[in-house]
Each structure stands twice: as C-alpha cells, then as structure tokens.
Image (tube, rainbow over the protein chains, first blue to last red):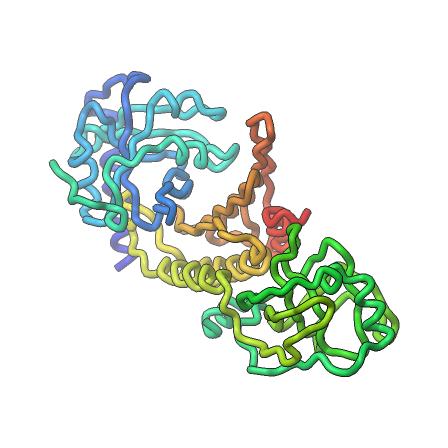
Length: 148
Length: 264
C-alpha cells in the first residue's frame, strides 16, 4: 500500500513539475507577498510555537497568498486538524542562506510555489519557524472552525 | 512507564522497590567530619518537600562519603538558599568516591537507583529517622511519559502525513528517538520547566528541540544514518547568536546534552 502511494505521489510530482516547467504561466513573486504553509498538528509545540521540523525540506512547497485564500490553502490538507502558517517572501529572501522563492504552479493548484534552498544548515529552519505566523490554528489550539 | 523505558533501552531508574533507610547510631568520626563539611547539615533548615529523583547529583560544595551509613544528608538544590533538604541512598550506588573507609570528598554522585527523597531536619539533627524511598514522581517522569508517548505515535503516520508527501517514520528511527529521549531525561532532570519538544520531519526523521536559558539545541535523527545532525545555538548578551553545527553519534549524546543542561 505504501509503495503504491509513494509511486502515485512520485508520478504526480513528475507530472506537476513538467506542467510547471513547460505549460503553466509562471508569475513573478514580489517581496511584499506572503506564503502559506500547512502545519501538521505534530509540528505544533505545547507553548503554541511551530517546530522547525515544519520547514526542513530543500524544495519546500507553499501557496502564494496573492493567488489563493488561507481557507483554500488549508483545505488542501484534506484533514481538519491541520493548521496554516504564513511566511513573508522578503524574509525568505533575506535569510543568512537566502532562499529562492518561485511560482511553480501545479495542475490542481495554481498558487503552488517553491521555497528552495538549504534549510538544515545555519539554523535556517529555526529562523523560518520563528518568523512564521499562525493564520489557522491546529485543532488542539483552535477556538472556532476555520471560515471560508 | 517501565515498559516504555525498557523498550527505549533506558537507564532511567523508573521504579524502585519500597525500602526504608535509617540514619542510625550516634555520631561517628566520619559523621562529625561530615557535619563540618556539609553545608546542608550546618544550615539545617526545616523543610517539608516533595519526592525527588536523581541519577547524577552535582553539588556546589563537596560532600563526603560515609562508611557507617548507607544514607547521607544532601541538598539536591544547587541554587542558593538550599530550599530542599534530602536524604540520598548511597548503598549499592556507583559513586566516584575513591575508597570506602576513608573520608573522600566529592561533588558528584552518580546514582544507579532513584533513592532520594526529602525529609525533615531541625538544626543539625535529622528528625525523621526512617526515610521511605518512593518511585519516581517528579516532573521529569511526566515529561518523559508525554514525550515517549508522542514518539510512539510517529510510526503510525501514514505516507503524505504532512500533506506534502511526507515519508513515514520507521521503527528503527523511533527506537533511536526513544533512546535520545532517555538521555534527555537524564540530562535535564534539574531543569524545570523542561523546554524540550520532539517532532517528525518530512524526510522520515525525528527532530528534538531543547531550550534552556540562552542555549538551544536542535538534534535530528536522519533515517538510515547512524550519526545525528546537531546544532548548538548560544544567544550572546549582545543578542547575536553563536552557532555550532556538527554530526554526533550516540556515544557523544551525554556530553551534548550536558551542554544544554548547563553542566559544561
């Protein structure tokens, strides 16, 4: 089951990459824009802060705020207990190891964007976690259901 | 609790049989010597405290071994004020006392069993002669329970658990994480509240984040790698941060965790 799911995700990623590289119209991302990143409840610390683990992949998928809404971005998780955090494009580009922020549309998600760069070294993921702001809380911290 | 610890190959002494240790006999030469050198006995506050556990005790002032008793009065609070006065069981305990029979000073006792509990003292004499030894009840065990329960949930995460194609956490990685948690509990039992957090990573690893004052530690278990990735961060008085990144194996963990505990 796991193998099939992995294979399915791999194929979907490849198709999306091809689509973004050759077909989709890509937009420039301004420094004033924001990014949304879905937060698994396991990434939420007891004190409410977000774990650095939420931001550790080299090509980190996010949604461009100007092309979507927090609710739509959150809804893509398909799970009610997830949260949503907001990051600043400018912050990503001015880290000690600057990250490349590029619009990289997926077939089912035109707002899909990549934050690419080394995050393990130089406490990058920790810095990103410190600047992230919760827009939609994870279920254990939520007081009201997310509104469209 | 014990089962969890065993699974983690923990050295944490999580349960001890109920025993009673008695401070017995009239003062001996060793005890007299001890009273002269023990700030706890000289201060002799009346104190009713909670039960505490310790595996490695560090003291600001040296204590002295005793050949006549299997218990010695100690303070387990290294801060000024000596708020807690305690009795520690030294029988069958590995200490770095050089020789038994002769007074030896030390400020470090490594305990293989959690036999330390608070009692009542008045002046220089120990009022409560019978000291029951109780199982772990400290905040450390609660914290350890929560952390291990959390780690044990990680292998249940399904592929794509983070909605970005996250990989599952293997049983091997989980076992390693449980071992790190045990080391953490041992290193951090002095710190209250303990600010340590564990979370799964996208790549199928586990990340520990520990904060203590101006020190912060990020320790990541990478799947299929024997070494852990480590970031040690110190926030300087100027507000700047000093970063030290390295890769360590499990044998270096106590040293690393002592750093975050402020022991070196």
